[in-house]
Image (cartoon, rainbow, N blue to C red; front, top):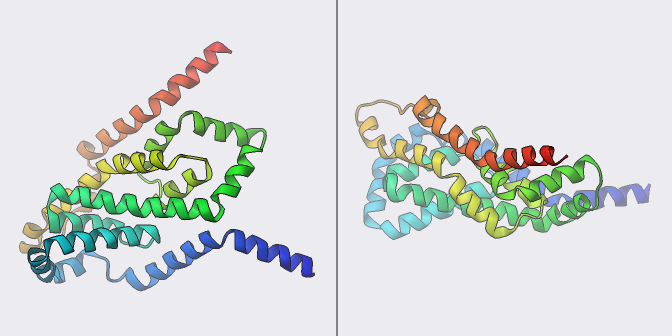
Length: 243
């Protein structure tokens, strides 16, 4: 019985980082989901703009740190924060501030996961055989393409896109660069929505977030996904011809 308890505690300790992230994310959602919305932004917009105009540098640093914190702990509000970045700082440089905050937060998850349990899992994958090894080898052979794909494809949870590379020996510089560049299309769309909020609020209207799925927006993003996947497809075709 003591041996079983010891093994159980060992497993819990091994995955304590993931458990902690999930607990914080759940707590953040429970306490903040009623506040991180467009209505709250509408209500406090005057206060936010006055603070920005009086303390621009502090406002930028505070915003980037807040974005980093929310992403690092996988808390809700990434979309609203991206819109807020556009509202406060315009499309440019707002999109840059959004990308910096999101990338710093994503990198925090990546590093914490790797230190916590990613290294051990990566070692297990490296020593595995069969299908698991093929998947890992495929990821290693097409790292840049795969990293950009998981950032560009709509619907891939940001949390998972941060965790999976930490299991697969992805170098830190590749993760950071692919994250920063890969989130640009989506960040630009929602930052630009935020940049037009003042006029929308003045008319008493609510922005249409469904614009992201309009053909003129989503089709170019799918085009980038196809471009990222092209090296993988060509390499696969070449491999079949050699066989």
